[in-house]
Image (cartoon, rainbow, N blue to C red):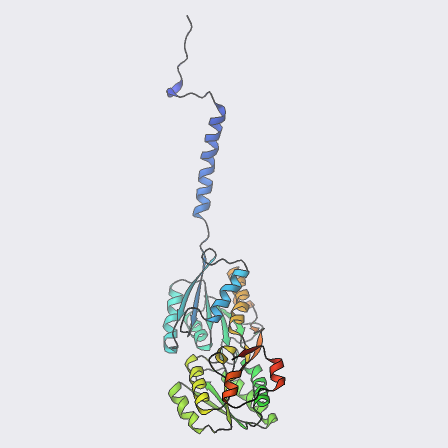
Length: 336
């Protein structure tokens, strides 16, 4: 009589291949589950500025620069954007909120935003743009060795003011007096004013520095402006002032020179200075280094690399000015 073998537990192991496939699956699952759990979260970049919308040109430049460096929005980095719509007194609270939210880095534009972020934290890295004179403003002690949690891209306000006066003189040779209008609380204006006065003496110009707080104070100052005067409006923390200067310069029919082509697009006669978007792209390299482990205090403050001359031909026509060929050949941007 032939005995029949009863399989254990009602299962058959006649296929060794199936057995080893099952073992392999069991070994694979814990490893890959752990990897999924340990996937790094995206870096959180806080953004602080006085813009009227989240799509400020420096922020758009930052995003584009980081993308080019391999940081994919949503996967490698996310942005918490706080813009105060010109309200500078809202800066400190916005900066503190970013710090409390646990951002890995704060990206700022203009002096007021940078100072608010610096006051809010001594540990979270800060990368700034559009600060005209970082040393003069007390943002950093040295450009080559910031030595703190702050670094960034300087707008070269002090270095470029003489060139702005020179271009103004070429475009409007009849001008003899220039009103240098700046946002009063910006500390970086002090060194810039000194440079402007020294350059004005060489050019036989009378420069009148006036610090103002708001558009109402600006209107009072500009009551003294004469027909053959001009306005010089360096970059500052209060964007409302730039708009007010454009409006008053057009109403008074006096030329106004700005620090960036952004304001030429709104009707300003001319600008000579860094491009906002390009500063954001340039700052992205500093942000990337910090997110990869570098200390901001070891990264030298950079000067803006892209300097542009822009002219609004329609405004020139309104003011009865003929743009010299020398300016036409050198200009990077024209507005009509």
